[in-house]
Length: 246
Image (tube, rainbow, N blue to C red; front, side, top):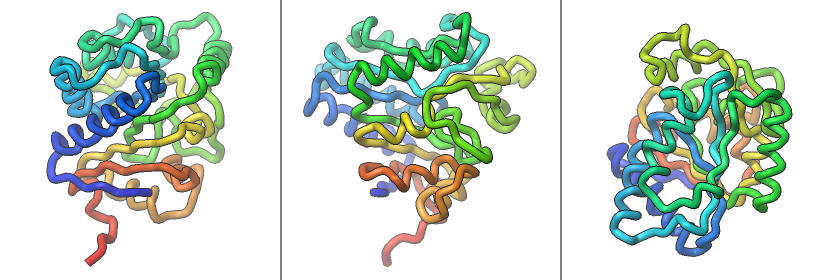
C-alpha cells in the first residue's frame, strides 16, 4: 500500500480529486467506483470545481456506487443515491445512462444484487475504486464477521454503522435501515486500482490494522493487502498510529 498523508481533509480531498482527474484524462471512458459519507465530501467538492473550470470531462465515464440502504428509494433524503445527486451528479456532465446504483426497494433484493454484479462485469470491471473505511474496519457495507461475501450482497448492519449514519436520518437511529446492499470484497478487489480515504484519529486504529495487521474477516479493510495497486490518502489523525520513516 502506498500511503499519502495530508495536513487537512481539504488537502486530502483535492489530492483524491486530482487522482480521479488523472484517471479520466488517461482513460476518458473509465469506470469509477464511488463512495459516500463524510470522508469524500471535499473530493466531490473539488471534482465539481474542476468540472466547472473545464478541467475534467465525465461524459464518457461510467460510475458504480459501492452500496445503498435497503428499504428506501432513491428520492429519500437518507439514500446514497440522493447524496450522490446533490454532491456530484447534478453538477457534472455524467450521462445518466452511465450512472449505476443498487435499488434498495427492488422486489427481490437478492436478484437485485446479482443484477448489479452482472452490470459491473458487463462494463468491464471497475478501473478506479474510491473507498472510505468505517471505525470498525468495514469497507462499503462489508461488516466484520466470521465470513465475508465475495459478490454484491445483502448485509445486516451493525449498530455502530447505523449510529454513524444516523445524521442522514435526522439523528434518529430508529429511522436508519437495518439492512443494506453492498459490493462484496471480491468485487472490490477486482478493481484495477483502489484509493482508500480516512480522516480523523477515530480511524487511526483500524487504518493501522488494515496496513500492518493480519488479514482477517474481522477487519474487512485488511483484505486490501491482497491488492497490487492500493493508495491510502490519510490526514494526520488517521495516520497517527502508522510508523513513518525517520
